[in-house]
Image 1 (cartoon, chains in turn green, purple):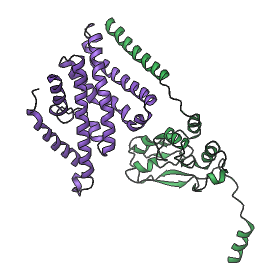
Image 2 (image 1 turned 90 degrees about the horizontal axis):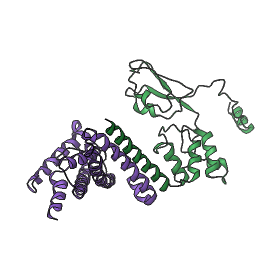
Image 3 (image 1 turned 90 degrees about the vertical axis):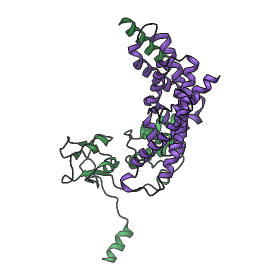
Image 4 (image 1 turned 180 degrees about the vertical axis):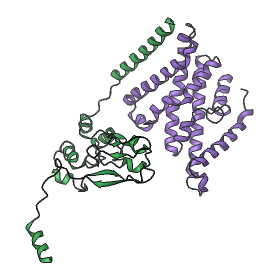
Length: 189
Length: 193
């Protein structure tokens, strides 16, 4: 019994030491920009960008094979911050060209179709879906990042994307219309 | 010399880990969709299996046998295999980034490949020495790679055929794996067990 405990502990410790030393000895410097980008990305590993997790996207972005607009859930805010460190010389507006000017969306579950199968619940990277087995699920709007992961797995197609409802916290003045647009509209009317 | 050749032949073809011993079926089904991926997985497994066969022999002769701890064999072998995989990954990342990128996700996946543990246990069961163990591991891994690549080629062709709907996808893959296994049974006469 003591032999077993001691030898297994020694084996584990020895291997751990070996791995620790190897990690020191064979340490690979990752470019610091990868860590910076990784820090800005949401970190939910939702996969909406098509890369294996946020780290994968950060590496691709650092070597220039992914645009700064590649993170759909991050939206405009994240893309702006990324543009500032990835392409510091470029004008932020040109760096973001090609980014869809979409309003932020969140998932919505049609309760008539939901069977309570828990598939979306397990898949959600931000734990934004609540509900129990065989009970209708629902989406916590504040936590949902609109990444589509739940829509892919829903067997009854009960989940759709909707524009994020405006709340007091998220409301802002709409962009003022230019005088030219207002004139032409009046003329048309 | 003759014996060594016999071990290679016997492990790679006659007692193929996948098709005759039915070990390591998860990567066999999971990573055989494309030939490139199959070659990557085969290379990574060859690497790990050979080293794991040697390391498990060392653990067995230096720790388990002298202390009479046969009942901890599986536990300690899993520990050793996991550490080896991690170690290889760390070293490879530094020494050969190209190979590291080529093997990619397949390297860590090998930790859970039952063929690696299976070969280590078989080695101990058959009482092999260090050189024989290494050769046994290498031969098994070559057999694994060979079968994986052959099967990936078959599946690439299957993907283009009009398979009847009830068989499309995984079912036809299992049926063709069965046929491949039967074909490999034909090697049984080549070498004595």
